[in-house]
Length: 209
Image (tube, rainbow, N blue to C red; front, side, top):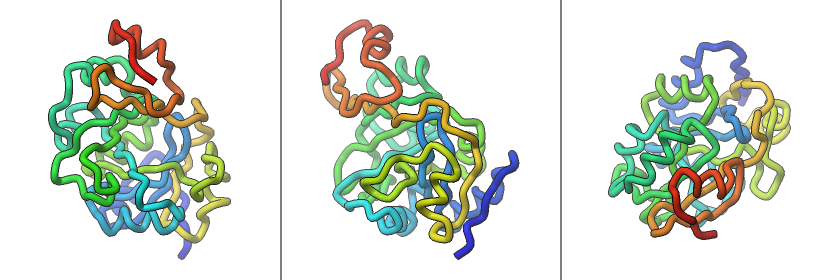
């Protein structure tokens, strides 16, 4: 397999690959991710295989905004809308209850799914063009450092994935903060590019860790 490098602004080639069941490495403000159609169980299975990722470990979905999250999540609490208004696009992944249209392979059989809106114009453009959520873990071999440049991605996956989008160096450079919104008060599962203090300031109450 030859990995196509997409350097321009036109994300149509990437969208075509995604909708055909392929895999595309995409830039975000945190780290590069390895994206596939989040509604296509076979495509998501390909991510697990190429990364060597345990199938007991769920994968988050990228969406272009909170209105898109409503298509794939149920019982979204008011606080999630408040956080999305303040921090999306940005380095915040919210854990919400999934709807049945999200394949079980994405959530490792669980009832919840991580949802994030990435702050990178190329990946946002891809999301709008493809019209599907992107199942997107970090674009690395499991257990290895997360990639912050296209070169890092190609070190892992050149010739193993369909395409990679060149979005420059990741601005934040650490993974997103993961916040479980299915419990009250919300609980931080992973501290990343968004601080606990910033979240608590917006929610006007403490969150658990």
